[in-house]
Image (spheres, rainbow, N blue to C red):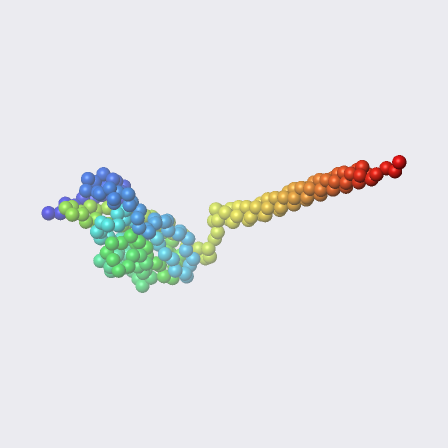
Length: 232
């Protein structure tokens, strides 16, 4: 019979190193896939669409797995959160009438081995402001047992009339322009320095050539004077 345990994400990652069934070759391939866990955006524009991101990467690509995703929502005036969407066996189901015909699956497609559990909200309204929670449930199937790993991600969504730029974005842009101007100024200083250095080297070489020419001319004159016979 298969054994089943419930593991957290940290235990799933630790299993990669602690399990005696793990070959050394696989132990060196922790993140061999292209999955990257990134945080979801948190600001939506009213009337537009918005993606609620929920990515839970599987640490070992060679292990068979099956996952399901449940999304919950709680507005600021609600005491408890309620389920709004469920995705399982490659089928999505809207659980809350407030989101009827406004939620669409935008995660992993064509597989039960889900890593992206994102959903898309159509025609965002101000009433969509609130806390969204994504529950990822994954069952890893090994030769003699199964491991269930769970992960939770929370998105605090704010609906605005238009997108506003954060202070970090503004500072980043200012620093970028300051860096560009500083780099151009540094290049200008370097060009002037190099030009002056080359010009000084050219003048020095010219003076040395002139002095060498005068020395040769003087030596030739002395040789000519010495070779002229003096009449007796």
